[in-house]
Amino acid sequence: MTLAIDTLLARSVNHPTLYQELTQFLFQTFEKNFWNEASEYLANQALSQGACQLPDRLTFRLESYRKMKVGLQAPDIHFQGNLWRAGEISNGPTRLSEVEKRYKLLVFGASWCQMCQKEMNSISSRYEDWRTKGIEVLFISLDTNPKAFLTFTKDLPFLSVCDYKQTQGKAAQDY
Image (cartoon, rainbow, N blue to C red; front, side, top):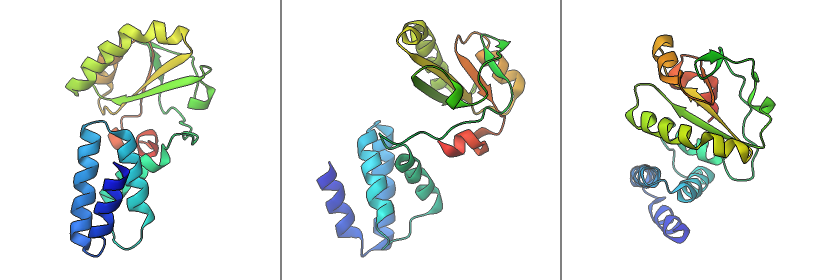
């Protein structure tokens, strides 16, 4: 896969429009199919070369893969707003770095997202087993409506937080 990415980028580098379209297409394809290693590699390759300017939105998305490369330390999150667990305010941590479990699974989603609803059910059913294995789950909502957020998270056994800023909140921007 890396050889194909290198070849395609090298052959299109002298054609800026083609380079942009190709990078966009590859990245969308990799993300759609959850090919994270390929997405990360493409991000590093496309952002490392300076011959072609990429659109800001694509650059931002590629940069998120470069920031989350395996082996790097994840950005700390200061939880904005109340932290909830099972519909009740938690006196839990105020920052991601204060979560005591060794492994942390951050899940970004929203009440209006149908896929998120399915994923929350799946994660909830596995949560206790994961917790005994040293994994803490934190749901970071991209909702803007407090009532929708609280209704959606009232039965979730893990920590949930929402700053009501959708993708404009600090946690969403950092990740």
